[in-house]
Picture (spheres, rainbow, N blue to C red):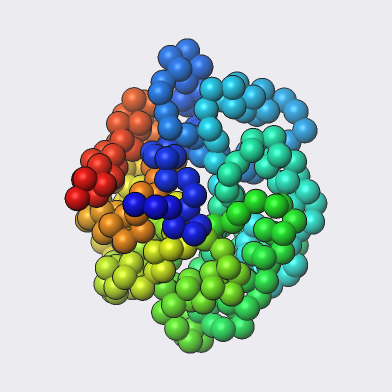
Length: 280
């Protein structure tokens, strides 16, 4: 199956997040890994251990950058100093694409350091898309935006979450980082059909997929990234790749992190679905 317009990286396969508890194992054992996803903000420094570690990783592995503080949905303009530091890192890593979240998280220069859901309005879509285009033009690298998990909804919304996602990416002409665990979490919190969400997403814009575990509480589900992927999320993943084709896939595990082998083994479960799809 040929790569879609926003996914020229079908050979990237399955990646895992680069996390501090695994550094020693990676450097000593040199495991075979398709690629590592790094959190951009952890390496946007002028020197020191982060860049020393990154240099060692880049000697052996492909790296894709994932951001957590671009805040495309915030009302103020993009932070130019942040963009300049991010571009230096992009040039250092050679990341073939860059991802960040479809959310807001700052007001008047004050940052919440959280991924806050947006009101799904046409005005918000216009502002967000303009900022994505501006970032892409400055960074000179393709951008894909990630759907976030949510725990509250805005009464002013004019469309569904997936309609808003589609509106933004069409206006920005960018890719989608499709997080199927976030879709599942939000579907349970807000009582919608996650398969309807996936059927509505334009498959030609899916550049990357995230899978992860979560925590279930009495009245809601929280996107904690501290458990293995559950069967309903694997079913959503299977459905997503059957629509989008072979897609670079990343397992997120960010809390109560087990051994590298356990995380990598969980990530490689995705290979079963990719192999089954290609052979179908």
